[in-house]
Length: 378
Ligand code: FAD
Image 1 (cartoon, protein in one colour):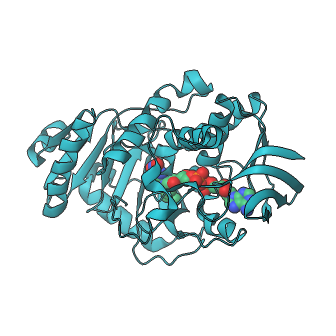
Image 2 (image 1 turned 135 degrees about the vertical axis):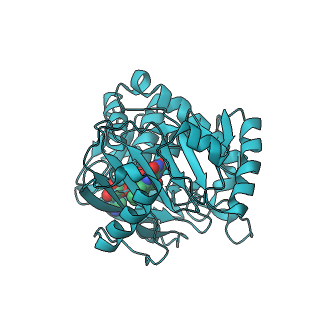
């Protein structure tokens, strides 16, 4: 069997790339997923979609993605429970607050409707938040959240309808390279020839890189997250704090989803959960949001952040292997960036350049050049 483009990974990124390739008329495409669609980080994520970034390039990429999320139902044909209830970024550090002020100025220059809120303004607007130690907050109404499973299944379904093949429970075991160029993959369902190969393997990006002898600078770290029982309380936005180390939103059914990072995590795939996380998270969140007290935890799971050295994705063609593309290292923001990234990678493959988003600063060559970018990660 032969395809022009094979994509390793059936998460939001792999399926978005397949969808946008189809939209550009390239349908000799196949996606290979070793488990089920959205079984990786995508199906385990918080579903947050934020445009408040500290670099112009990321603001533009996120704003482009939001345009696609807004049209998802019409364009892709799936209701992904998309809600633009806003993102409230809370800062508990003087240094971070100063950075937020600079960010807001730049974000406004990019055309984003975002505002700065003093603690008093936060309390007036949202009396249910405990503002002790809060220095400042920023708010963008057009930020929001969506259901990551539905978004992935939506892209896969639309891709299939355009003639693209999506193989689930099909593991890519090795990659065939001849004269420095990819030419095929060995999978658990046999050999497939291809002219172009995309590594969209999320937490397994490094292992896939090794299949062509490339040492990708990515590592995966466990992130835990839980959901509570539902509460008859309307919480309209996604709350996040880098200095406070948490994010939280309410689901369509009234439950609260929340997570935090853990700097002691060791690299590697670890899908277990800990009681320590539940205790820490519950203590912190009930202090900040006292209305959560007495609410029980319903489910608790974990997934991997695939991290690059600067916590930004690695996108574009490999400098070592011809026709081998990367869309990896998304840290905690791969869901929200996936539509714009899917479009950009599809354009790179079909036209040899991007037409709508500049992703050149996210190539592999940036490492080792001392480029420092933002680390907005919980
Ligand atoms: P994945 O979804 O991991 O997909 C990669 C797929 O590749 C997997 O399904 C895997 O099975 C498959 N695969 C790997 N190796 C092979 C192989 N050899 N053969 C075949 N298949 C293979 N992002 C946001 O934007 N907003 C959030 O609110 C948010 N919250 C998060 C909360 C948590 C707890 C976690 C863990 C992540 C969060 N993220 C969030 C990050 C986001 O989930 C990821 O960046 C994004 O889902 C990455 O998508 P992906 O398609 O690259 O990876």
